[in-house]
Image 1 (cartoon, one colour):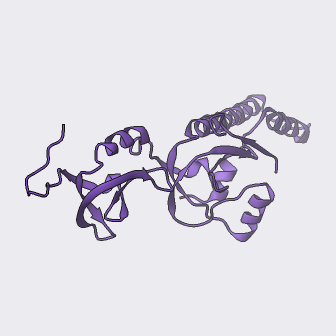
Image 2 (spheres, helix red, strand yellow):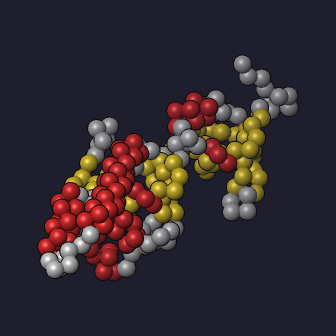
Length: 226
């Protein structure tokens, strides 16, 4: 396998086997090789109909153009995804396929679930585009299920969250969505780059906040904010 890696300047499910096969771009050399084989192997006493041969070659060229266009689009998309938080499906691979990936320089995140990751760069292996993360894991670009940046616009969320410091918030907690309340003491990021609020000695995701109120003063009256 040939390997090339690319990192952006700013910092640089069908089976995965099917995804890999679909990513094999069909180049001009392949096209010419097939055409030459077709001509060489035909029966000289019963040559193929020229129009049928031309039509077959045209269909092969359409396939070549389609696959090459997908490859170029995948590379362009991977470039745009660098720095973004995306939801991806882990790589479903057996031992033999996993060894092949690792021998080619990849470190796929093997599993059956979906994860939110921050894309740090990408690499190309046999004209298949793989995303890379800061912990060295790789995911096929076709495994992207959702781009999270619209939901996790960190600049906007930080600006909004800073206004919440000292405010009382209601939020959903735990798998059962139990509602709790507490005063916001800090603002930060989790390991997926999402904004979280420090509340009640723990951390609450910004998206889990369902209500914001002004905390009461010691006299029992509501505090005012500008």
